[in-house]
Length: 386
Image 1 (cartoon, rainbow, N blue to C red):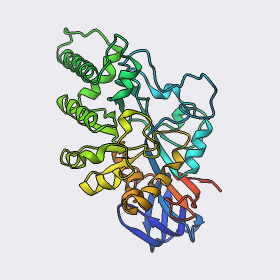
Image 2 (cartoon, rainbow, N blue to C red; image 1 turned 45 degrees about the vertical axis):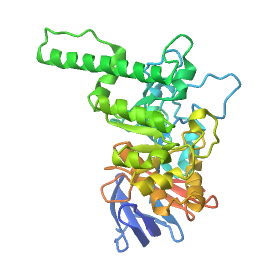
Image 3 (cartoon, rainbow, N blue to C red; image 1 turned 120 degrees about the vertical axis):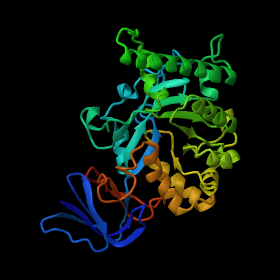
Image 4 (cartoon, one colour; image 1 turned 180 degrees about the horizontal axis):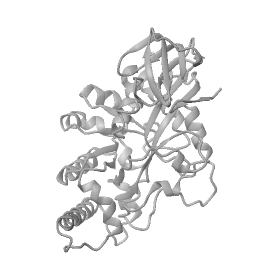
């Protein structure tokens, strides 16, 4: 049994508890409140003066494969730029659990991340959800059962291909994506027929096998789209094929905030700390989170990075200080809302009895660059950061 006492506890779903206690055992929170009795013999952290939040969650990142340390001429391991349709790729095959990025992420208060393939391809492959604990092999970090499929619209696929090969245009993006999903749907239907009638045996297709749960609505499609028109196209295609989906980046989303809200579109917004590095990001704005929340869009925030994931709370802090985002919504955007994007809100994203004991203990406001994360707790295991 372990406990945090005398803390300012931000539960996210049940308000703030002054002088609060969080109790956990066997990796699960057992009690949280102002008058929780700590059993004799429990290991206790006296968190007087500290703020306790759920462990932060990065729903869209590329840890250890997209940034420093690196070397000149390195081919980065998160884009297989040899075919625009690569659903059979698994980002887990590119991840090194011993990379120092995971230590940096954990020390920044992040307990869960979703690693995704990049956006060079229309369909880039399968992501993986990880707890940021130290590990010898990746399987010790993986949370099984949460493997989304990465899609991408907009500039990247047509820039990476397009030399007398589809997709060369946004029209090509949409057409090739529809063609592939239609093929996957036919393949899925044949598999169902074969289940009912073994004589209708179907020749295995390694690529399409990974899209079957997507077209059946059983695997979430995570669809890269920055520009407003690309967002609408992605949503239209996803709805056409009955996909369970979220839109990633949405940096131009304030232009269609009411439309996103009316259509109940799940959004992961960011990165917002970069300039107009490509055409589809010319209308990117740090006002976007506040505008989307005001319209009624429950969104998560991302830095779309790996090594620098720890900086995401600082970006949220700038949105609070200068761009109208409330503290409460910033907290949701890094906790319960990304948990919902990962379909893990029953396990993580808030401090409640029965949930994973994933916590971050801060020296003050976590959205201030003057604050440090003193401790990170992952499945009940305590890591002292400083």
